[in-house]
Image (tube, rainbow over all chains, first blue to last red):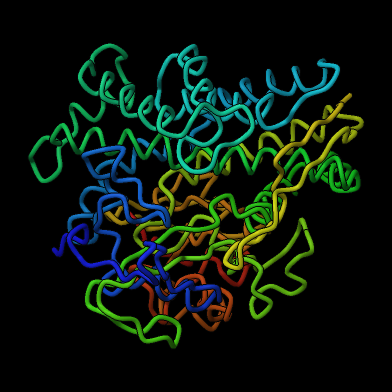
Length: 374
Length: 103
């Protein structure tokens, strides 16, 4: 395997601004996501557009591996992340969502992202990782985005990134502290008869925290925004809770909780008709592809019963999102519970995200959304 | 009411009957391993991939273009592939055995 950390990265100019090839069309993106030989994920920190390797010395596993190593690794950890498909797990998520909706309906007003979405994301993550729910009190202090731009209420970026590495290191080195937790499971897991190395355990834990954080938070805030803006959508799901399933898929498409990742082309190749040089990095524009009019009629319209809805919100191919069952369950549960209990959601303040970059879509993204729900 | 069998990746057979609905919904009720049906039939997730025996394709119908688009890069994709959420259970399918594509 080529270690792409060592591959020369093409840069646009001496200022160090990297010139990525952005894949915006649905078809080009889907083909590339499934062609891991040409579009590799085998890097340390380069699978995001702004590399983060400085914050950690280990890979995120299995996200930063390619097949065949990726295949056995993914198969080994998959069962732990399929637990959201079980009834006891769904009951626990329903309880956590119920408590979050209690707060939303009883508070005078709620700043949705820090006051509803972030705490709910962290509380439900304790269920996914089989950790004590009280741990979420610490996790929420890391802010909305453990990497990337400063968001409302976030501590500085380096502090957030370091806090996550420090936490997963502490837990990885004390795996018996919480029996049955992800850390405990990883300490006992074997792949092809060998135990995981410390770096591998750190890497799984790290992506488990970072991969589903800002993404699920954006999805949850988007759901509240949709219901506030379109009471008819809320009413439709209240009348027919089964609609929450297709509605979840549509919101995943429109919101695109993950808008952008990167891959690297170690040997060069063709990306959607563009010839790319060896070492070129590509921006994978999930948000754009999910609005591709060649695939989705009226792509900017929210249709709760859209079918077919082959969105790429969780990617496609070997690296499709490990946490997708959890994310779908949480979103569906919030849709049903909010539709059932909230009579009215009033927007008190809505600050849309600043203008989106060409490779992005703005969608239902907010710098700030304050609501009063009853 | 048609009786349908699902053969899991390890050869285990699970059998059940249903009036209407999809093969995926029946599989979920039977707890068939390898059928998740996460999107509920919106053709978003591809987690209900089955293979239809060749002599049953005329009764189930072939995969639609949307199903092919969903499954084309999946392991085990072939001419017999269908999304079980798109197979409506009718009496014509009585006795059908579907092979589950994923383990």
